[in-house]
Amino acid sequence: MVLDMKDYAPGSTAPPFHPWCRTVTCPYFDDNYTRRAARGADGEIYYVDGKMTYKEWWNSLSKADQDKMKLDLNKHRNLSRDKEQHQNYKKVLGEEMPPFEKFRDLKYNNPNTWKEMQAFYRQKNGGWLPDSMKLALWRDNLRGYNWQAVDFAPKKINDHFKRHGADFGAVSQEQYGTMAKQLLNNSVEGPIDGFITEQGYVFRYDKDTNSFAIGKPDGVIATFYKPTGGQQYWEREKKKYGF
Image 1 (cartoon, one colour):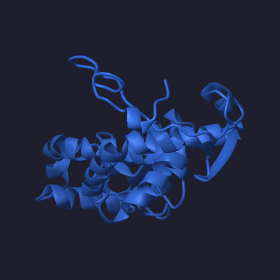
Image 2 (cartoon, one colour):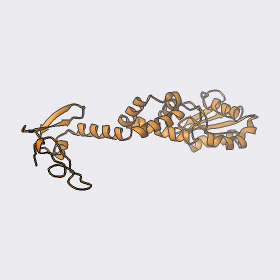
Image 3 (cartoon, rainbow, N blue to C red):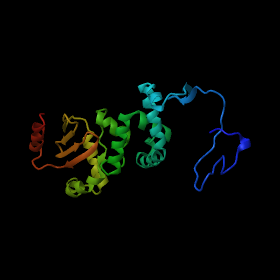
Image 4 (cartoon, rainbow, N blue to C red):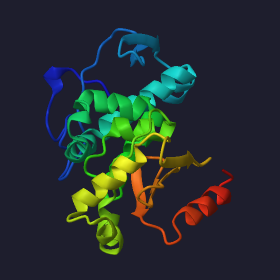
C-alpha cells in the first residue's frame, strides 16, 4: 500500500497497528527500476537484471569467481580464530612465523605449505621435535636437502639417556645428544661407516669407538648406543637393509 505523508497516522494508516506490531515503512519511488546492484569476486559493484534471483546470479559466475568468493567468506568468518591460531603458532615457530596477513594467505592459498606447517606445529608442540628444530630445516630434511641431525625428541631423551648415557661417559642429556648428533652428521669415511635407507633413515657406526646411531628422516635422533657385538652387530644391520 502506498500512502502520502500527509495521510500518515500511526495506528490507522501507519504502524504500529497493534501491540508488538512488526510492520515497517519504506520510501516509494515512481522510477521503474529494471536493474539491481551486485558485487563481483573482485569487490567491484556492477548491475544485473532486477528480476534475477540470487541462484541465477550465483550460477552466472565462473567457477574461479565462485571459489574466490567462498574463500573470502570463509576468511571473514574465521578472522578471530585465525588471529588466535597465529599467536599460538608464533609461540612455537618463533621468528619463522610470518606476519598475520602472510600467514592467512599461506593458510588459504597454499594448502601443501599449510599442511607442512600444521604437521610441524603439532609435532613440536607435542614434544616430538627438538626445541632447536626449525621449520625450514625440518622441511629440507624430509625432502632430502642437506640432511642434518638435530637432537632427540623431548619425549624420548630421558629414556635414551638413562639407558645409554653412561656408556659414553656423558654427564648430561645435552652432552649425550651432542655426541649422537656429531656421529650422525659425520661423512662416511675412515672409521665412520653408514648408509641411508629407502625411507630416509640415516645410520652411522664408528668402528673405533663402537658407537651406533640412527637419525629419522626429519632430523630427529632415534637412538644412540654401543651395541653388544660391535662390528658384527653393524654388519648384520647393513645386511638387514640391503647394504
